[in-house]
Length: 64
Image (cartoon, rainbow, N blue to C red; front, top):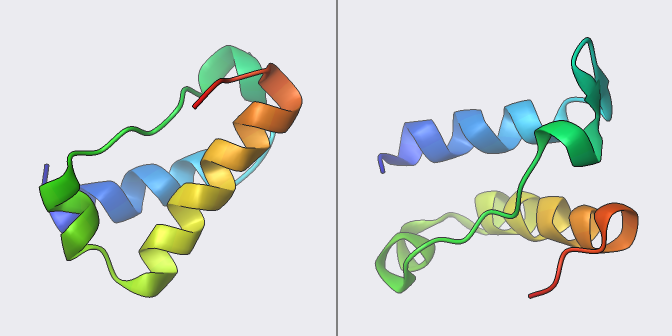
């Protein structure tokens, strides 16, 4: 997965909680990346990814 694609996916996931299809839990899923991809993330990208997954844990009951 390219770095640009990761950024776009995170931005889309964090853009809002509600869409025409339903709430965050209905349209989002945990982001699980390989160690290689995580190592290539900038600090801001890693923080956005972590925020997305923590939001899912809190709102949707996702488990690590």
